[in-house]
Image (tube, rainbow, N blue to C red):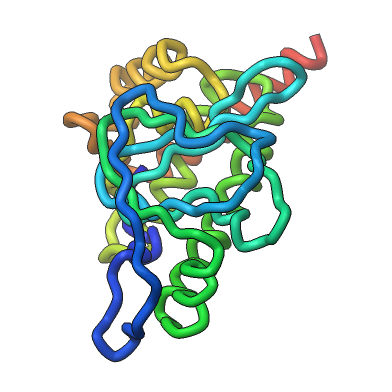
Length: 233
């Protein structure tokens, strides 16, 4: 997923920060390939150069998508902890390539490249924030409320990083949005179409615009009242 407040990719290093590091091995993968599985020993991390990868976690016997990663993102960072096991399964959504970083290489990069260490911390903080948002959204009972809440959070992040104005624009795919919300893609598409018909959002390819954040907030408030009335009925 791409939002304007995403931290700079870990792959972008400045000459001043760059220091010699052990050789890193490249790995190519195809769509549908499993890079690693939940529960396996975590001995290597991956720095995505191309492609997208989905992280899946097994919860009460069912597989749940928890995140979609793109070029510049690091995954499998649990390799930083000796003896750690994979906490999720990584499946490629498209063909791509990644740098394979063993524990020594990863530790060396973090020790000798302050900018890389800072960007890793930014990514982990972003993932923690996203996880908290997911928990909040999944606690909502109404499908439309889930979608509106997720879009409001993304729009606010985009707004904070852009010039002032009544609206915000950001890029997100149906798969990424469904992962954030915890609903299937078709359900999310129907909810988005309803918002589009109500002129709360505009969609072009994978770019989504919320022309008026205040109107969207009012809608979210009305949906909350509707949900409360249902609960009392």
